[in-house]
Length: 195
Image (cartoon, rainbow, N blue to C red; front, side):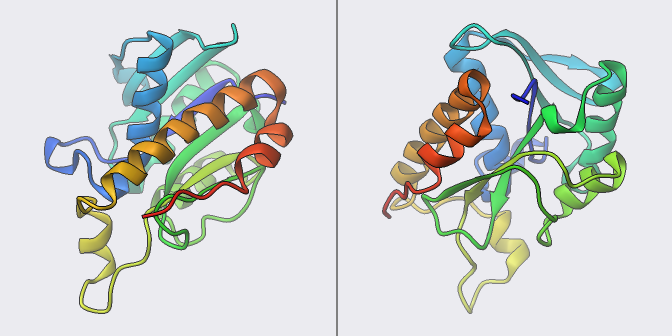
């Protein structure tokens, strides 16, 4: 099944803009820009929604939950129920500490891997069986704790790599919409940008 709902994870306040933890928001923002879609706040879904036709002609919805990361599942579940979606038709885009900056990994399913936004979505959907696109943000250094790392901004050296991987993320999503997840995984999982 090809994705019908693309969820980008992040935190809504301006102070979180361009932080590592908001890479999911950055990717779906880039999708919306590329496809000429505009964001509208939908209170019943506790999020920002952009919907329309993606590159390639597929009908798609984008979601940015406004619930804060740890309660992302509330927003996803509300939209999931309203539109009677299949779990497999939801693609979640989020940051991953275990992948280096510039790396992305597309998977059909899996655990939360310690990510609180994913834990919330899995709990609210009662399933791990939905695709996800993990974007590497790198591990924190020994002098930096995890919270300040994920809520920190990318370094000047990392920014061009992040811009590149966001573009690749949009391309991978477009391929998954048009040709299915398997083809997108084969095409984009081997790729790695360099810092």
